[in-house]
Length: 250
Image (cartoon, rainbow, N blue to C red):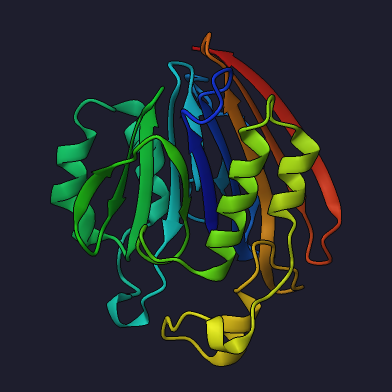
């Protein structure tokens, strides 16, 4: 996952709204969102190489999403897959925070958002600390939660304007997540990769035939606990590969 926006308690009818883009190599095998067998309780897309996921939820309304932290100096090739963290949380939410604090060092740097209802936390593995998300709009990408990269600020402001005015509109949310605009070079973050890659990764939606946005996930939960979730998938040219839609009454 590259970027995630959340609106907590902003819209009285939809107190939780989440939209996120997953950026990955297009050749990496991936399954679309589905209920995972055999229990059929976890709903998520699946990385078929390592077996994990980047965003998921369960039938009890617990939700989690992952973004990698771009920090080459802290990266190692022999660590466990970060994608296994989400199904672990969805399977044992009560014991998860303490477990995560103890085991975060076994994974390359990450931000993990997790919670239920209006109680959500973001864990930064480099801090490491669990920060409770306050009511409002939040943006989380490949740095610390309080980093303000141009694409984070742009998407966060757009989401706030959209959801404060009524029912979230799916197409309007998708427009935010399909934004390919890039900032000027002097506004780019410095994350340890080349200037060419900083430019390529600086838009909310990344269109590239080798590495780019593979999917957009949209989720909104109403005040009665109903969760609508959809996942739209893309190829390297930005073409629509299909959409999955689900409803969970938590």
